[in-house]
Length: 97
Image (cartoon, rainbow, N blue to C red; front, side, top):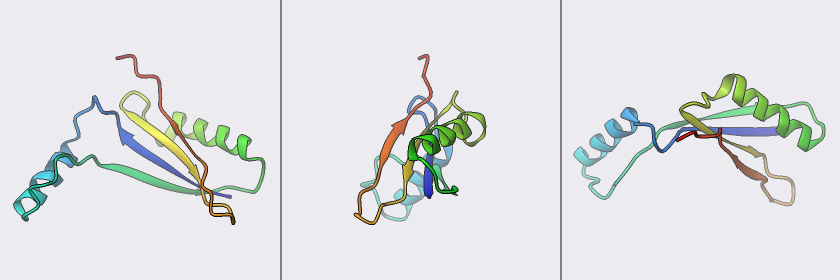
């Protein structure tokens, strides 16, 4: 079973890398770009098993290592099944703000 974890900065956190890319794109002639946010994608292959248990383990991995819940949100997606459907469920650490 394969999954992808998408980790992004929370909207309330300044993204200097995104700002630098936005400025570079504007310099290159793309003034229509209003905002750029940079994140990371982590692809994980798991031993086959129950999907709900896999999701719980992945979310634990995110909280413990893959994402910093203070400043980052994360989303877990499982690879498409043969039917072409993709299971996606956004997950976010509780933002006290």
